[in-house]
Image 1 (tube, rainbow, N blue to C red):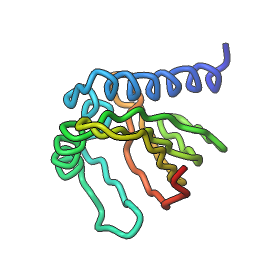
Image 2: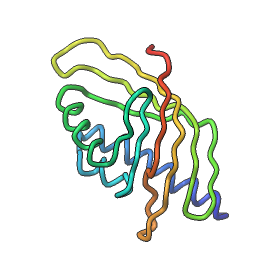
Image 3: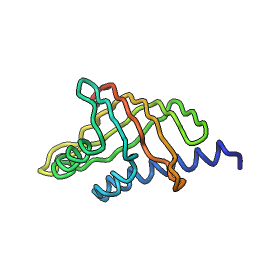
Image 4: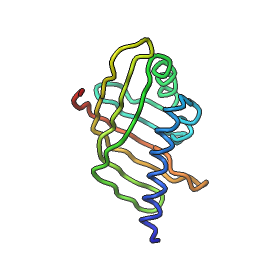
Length: 132
């Protein structure tokens, strides 16, 4: 197996762990998949650090069931850094009842492999897409 294929497999495991952590509503597991210096630039809002993402996740997970997925359009890997471009897709259902909605955001992501060998999300930038 070449290095690129090995990195691809390891990065794919990051997305699987992300979806699983949301399914289990495991806030700590979700945050462990972000680097300590994580920054997200959401569309039309101020940049968010790992700490501000945490407070938003607490509110979101208490109010909604969230099922995330990612449609990759591009992946570039060099050493311990990876760039991904694609669609972040979130199926969201209010816990109080109601219909499932799907939100799509175009995203640019930077992933970084830590000294422990694990890939984590390091940076993210999103652009709102259509609600389906």
